[in-house]
Image (cartoon, rainbow, N blue to C red; front, top):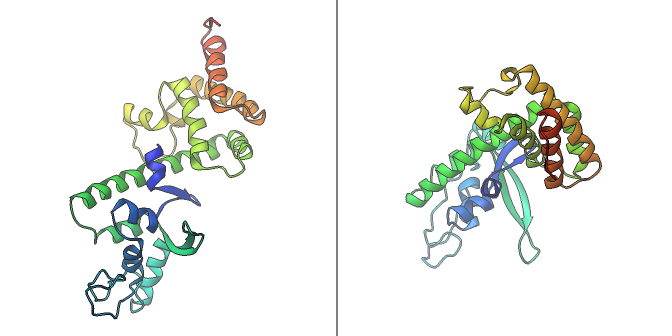
Length: 244
């Protein structure tokens, strides 16, 4: 999960990455990636130019000024210009990009290492889309639960939801939603696993979520919440004695 967060994250419900991260992972200067996106050119002719690495020719960019209006409008949805502060505190440009934007950009990256990173990115985007779908579904299926998660975190991230949802699913189902779909032949694009659960499983999940809501409001740490909920499930729902 940490590796996933390193290269692809979530912004307004959309999986995204940044030009800065792409430059780092593909072993390129950030300026090179910006050239590839913006279509800037270098007017120098010398081999020692640092701006173009001595190439001295126009960098073919996805957002170059002479693109047709319709094409540029479509591309502008894939790439959003922003900024970050470098180590010296100076404001520098960067771009956020979605999966389609990354795919277009990465077409120009060649070599064995580049191919490996392209595959990793595709997997990361797919996994992030799955997480976002599960969160959106949870908000519809269990609104009180998701509200409690949102209130427990000043700036809730996608993994705050997935951690809680996966924790309860693993306790009740023995696995998370993703693997439950795989094990039961359910299309991974299916938004919810709820239609495939028994009435008893749904009832149990809802009961554990009510307990989790109280623990979230009480500001109990995740691992302690997990242990309390597991103990309750084993003792009360499964009817087993728990040794303490």
